[in-house]
Image (spheres, rainbow, N blue to C red):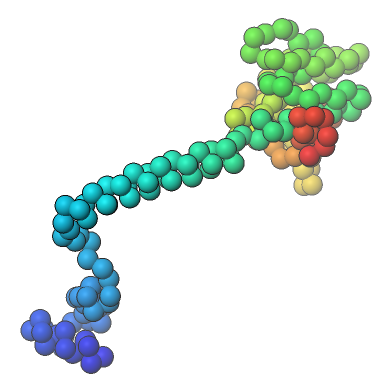
Length: 190
């Protein structure tokens, strides 16, 4: 409080300022804030330049380490789809699932579901992992839909829209289900 009165007297300000406005007038020296710029000799500037290069290199090293630690999960782990008919596949890219899926450059894998009732569409849904290692599922406009199993009931997937799902998620399509989880590259469960 004494410092505030001294500042007001020094600046020639009356007692009509609010405490917030008065506080904004406090000098950085009174708050022990170092000045933003300093004068330096030529030798001092060269030392600063060298230090900046070292700091820059250290920063680049930290960024490289950060990138390596944030390598997409897909390079360390793979998604696995397990279908209720007993089929299980480790996904190595985008996968097309259906009764009679056609070969396409868009999908690196196809899974044929043997459905004598014909309720599974020829190309029912696609699945895979994105660049961040997240599992995605996309209904391809199937006649009977693809459903996300949740504790609160089945939720239909939007047609032709990728949905990110969590490990252990189960989807339903026709009379089949498919569950997704992660496995290490060598095949062990994650």
